[in-house]
Length: 302
Image 1 (cartoon, rainbow, N blue to C red):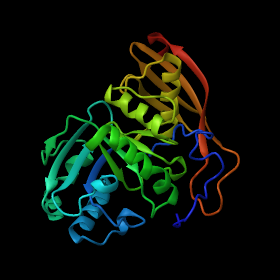
Image 2 (cartoon, rainbow, N blue to C red; image 1 turned 120 degrees about the horizontal axis):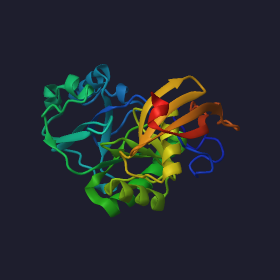
Image 3 (tube, helix red, strand yellow; image 1 turned 135 degrees about the vertical axis):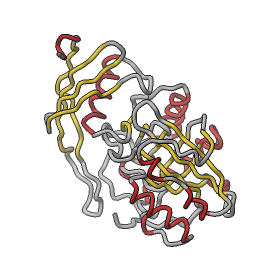
C-alpha cells in the first residue's frame, strides 16, 4: 500500500459503521515481538538497520514466525538497550509467551525459531504471566494507523501501563485503530478509547467483547465468523469457551462449533461489501455472512 498523508478508505471505515467481523489475519500463529523505537520502514521485511535486527526479521519470516516491531507509546520509547523481546504461540488453548531483555539485537541469533514456529516454548526467555496488548501505529504503512492508533496507544498506556505497546502493521488498515490481545491473538478494530478499554479489561478477565471483535488470528475467516455467531447465540464470552472443530466447503462453508457440551452446525457464505475504497487502497472488502446456525446433538455427528 502506498504511503498516504490522509485517509483513502471507504466511508464508514474507522467508525464501526462497516463491520469488521471475520477479518483477523489468518496465517499468524507464532509471534516474535522486538522492541525497536524506529524509524520503521513501510514493511518490516524492508528493514536494513540495525543489521542484526534486520536478519532476525528475515529469519522469522522464513521460519513461519510473524515478526512485529514494538515500542512504547509517546515519550516512553527507549532509544538504547535494554530492549524487550517476546516470543509466543497463539493457536488453540495451549498458548504461551516468553520474554527477554537484550543488550544487543545480536542475541536474537540464539533464538530457536523452528521451535517457536511449531508452538514449542524454546526456553529462550522467561514465561510471561500477563497479556501483551499491541496497538498498530504504523503510519509509514498507512496514515490511518498513526492517526487513530497513536492516540489510542497513549490512552491505553495511561490506563494499563506496560502491558501496552505500539506495533507495526497487524493487517486491516481500514479497521484502524486496531488492537491485538496476546497470547490468544484476539483482534479488535474500529476502536475508540472506551471500546478499547472494555476490550482490554475483558481480556484481562479471560473474556472477549463481541462489539468491534475482528476475530482470532490463525483461523480461516469463515471459522472466525462461525465462532462469532455461536458466541452471539449462546452468550459465551470466555476466550477459549468456543471452538471451531471442523470447517469444510468453499462458500458456503460448513463449520461444526462446540461450546461446552453443545455443538452447532454453522453455514457461512463469503460476500462483497458495497461501496469500495479508492484505487489507492488495497484492502479487500469481503465479509462473511452466517446463513444458518443449528444445534446438533451427539447422534447427529456420527
